Image (cartoon, rainbow, N blue to C red; front, side, top):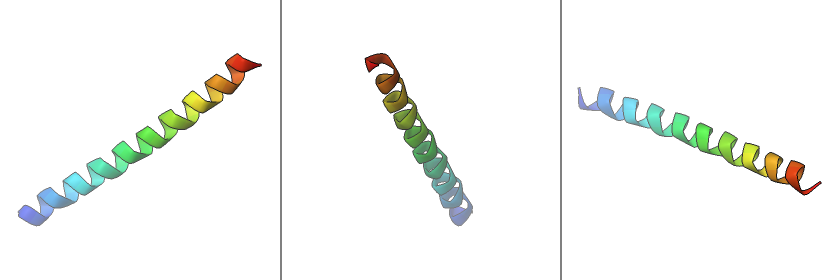
Length: 36
């Protein structure tokens, strides 16, 4: 049961990292767009 919970947490952290990375890339892209 505990291992299952840890697996869920690991999946959540991975998806969170994915979202943060994408968000960061989008922000950089928008900043470049605004500066031009």
